[in-house]
Image (cartoon, rainbow, N blue to C red; front, side, top):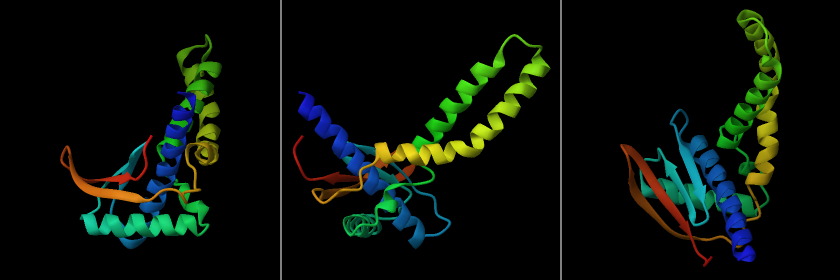
Amino acid sequence: MMVMLQEMVRRTRQHHAIEHATLHVLTARHPGQRFSGYSDPLGFIITGAPDEYTVRRAVGDALLRLQAGEHSLALHPNCGTNLVTSAVLVALVALILGGKRKPFERFVTMLIGVLPVLLFSKSVGMYFQGYTTLAEVGDRWVADIQPIALGGLRAHRVLFEGDL
């Protein structure tokens, strides 16, 4: 049971890295267009790509580039890990500095404490992405890419080979 859980976490981290690399490739090929992704143990979802061919090419190139050693592609500045890191750090600082002061004094104190946290939290989030992604993807290969309905968004489901 523990081995299966560890394997699910490992694959999710790998898929997260491939998702980020795919987003980097898509963004470079389609400047100004918005893309996003979500990873899980079976693969990931990409939103914003115009068609399956575009996604298939981007995923293939992303995998090849990660396997060739471009591990920096596994980290993405707009990752949810950065958002969560910022939110947690800001909440902690606000809790610590809040105290029992007058409202205006509490506001100013928290603002002074929160601003520096916001400035460095993205760097901390990028650091944590080293734990939420795994750029060693030599054992991952695409099984299927399917267009899916995701609300009103254009999306594609990328699935990888291998049993859990």
